[in-house]
Image 1: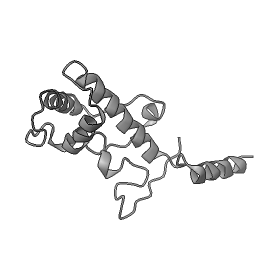
Image 2: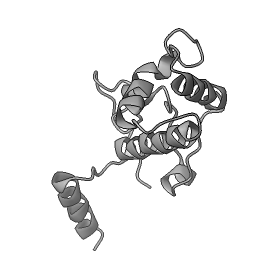
Image 3: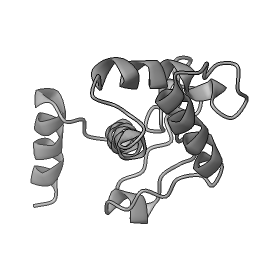
Image 4: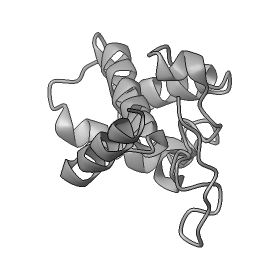
Length: 130
């Protein structure tokens, strides 16, 4: 696992730290266990995500509930992308979408991004190892 604590005006908590748009799910640094694929999520999410699922299931306003307000914009996207969502599958859908957010957290934390430029940089780094 490579570490880089570079900060910028755009990313004051760190370029390789979960970016602001993901902080409603994860704003803490990631560790080795997470890099290995086990998402360690904040305890606050248990109640918050239960509230999100309940509001999505009954169509009530997420923004008016303090437990779900920080997730409202994200939840609206979930609602749009899952027209099949109902009371029976809402929890599974929310869990799936949290997994997608966590995958993005891992991408943000990666020193070598998953694109052509990042792959080329990783290849250069590996060549320096001999």
